[in-house]
Length: 173
Image (cartoon, rainbow, N blue to C red):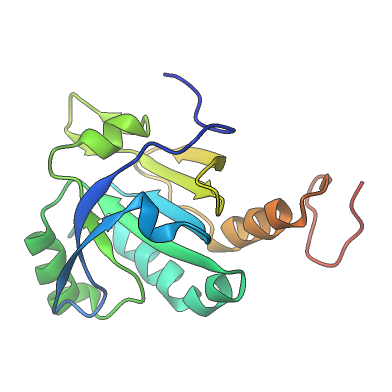
């Protein structure tokens, strides 16, 4: 797999179910031009770890907005599956769930498990110019840390060199 960090993010266009569960919208990379984008892949709707991540990121949505960042969650499920999940057990969330039904976007970002037809838990931070600045890929069974995602986003935004465990307000190298 070719590295993505430091390169232009693969372009994408997907149909997304908006967080209210009532409408669908096409989303593409250009929609996020001029803003930071935290794009994260999850395996499937109606599973065990996935809703904990999605609701966790949704609860902290305003923290991301303060950093001029948008959130976009992606799985290989259809937009209709996303809609039923939001209307049912997931509830209202503050960002769209995009449908990568063709698995092209998951493949382009290097997170597709072809044998299983699902995406690993990949997370990518894309800068306002469309460059991938951070990526991390987790095993299917391990959820991500919202706090760590915010920490890395803030560190990237400094433009400086941030030492281990750097926190906002601390000195840069």
